[in-house]
Image 1 (cartoon, one colour):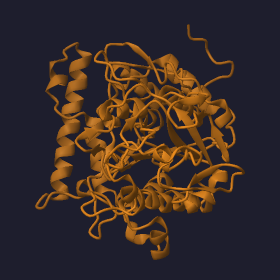
Image 2: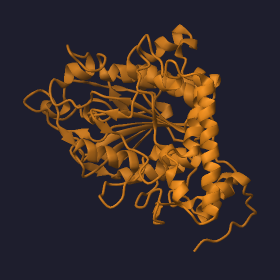
Image 3: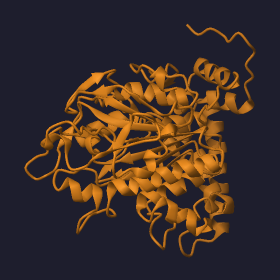
Length: 452
């Protein structure tokens, strides 16, 4: 049963408009009151306003990045040495030297565990906090945050850089939430010299006044459909092909110079761009910083290439001929993540921006006959920084060969609950599916309290 908050909670006209479409918006009135009450409470230090997820698609090896095993047999420990960091006795890969100097700002979960070792299933679990099921399509965490945190501004509340589809896989969608919460995918690589976002310009030959006329027509149709709804005739509503709020957002995005400017990386100083590194992950992280600076609640940076079944050493350390992404997956991550931490800190945004670095699973404890590692969801690592995270620590541990969790196993549901908490959202807040079914932001997740 819902209990009113002890202190008065004001609801704006916009709130009542939002509640008016419960099925479409997926948020009940009690849930909205609860959310507004939480937002009006005294803010905790470091409460995150935005989140940047750096998605290492394919499944990064924990044994070559954040959980090295220098005392294990050669076939387990792999080719890389560990180095000390700025955070006491925490050691990470020798190919992350810049991050090592900034570990006081970051925390590593070394006991992540999942039963799902297939790319699509593992991706869904990590990016939604729910194991996939045919009964319901769960929304990505980014869509949930964008849905609850989006303020109706010009920029979409959830943006994917450069793309939200990797290897033919959709990295989590809006699920049962409105289509407007689906990630806005740039479909363009910020590292390219000719980088531009194709959907931010009119098609050739399409004049602005033509778009204005279409907007007027749609508004007229919307008025007619609302009148029809009031007369209990829903057939006119079904005739409108594009939801007015989605068209309105697209219109503002197309016609706003300020929105377009957020994507203009050429406004950055050359030394800033160089600090992030020339590869896609670096320039994408720089763009992510510009977007959260403009108030975007959630940005997903996608970085493919981590599915290292063979020749792991050259792929992650120095690249190889024909690589789909730039040489040196780990060194490129080192540049991008370190520059992002520094840049956010210098701009006073690190405490309000949660950074999460993760993939869908880890890699096998033993190198295979092709000098690579295969899928291994039983234990892997995730790194978090900024946004209220208590840095300079390790949560949990794996066993001596990196095969299983040893202490404090953490599930993707636990991670999701913790991310929501760091973002000031109650994991037990319920959203509604189109048929009125209540769904918690995180049903089974336990918040990792030591991380906050």
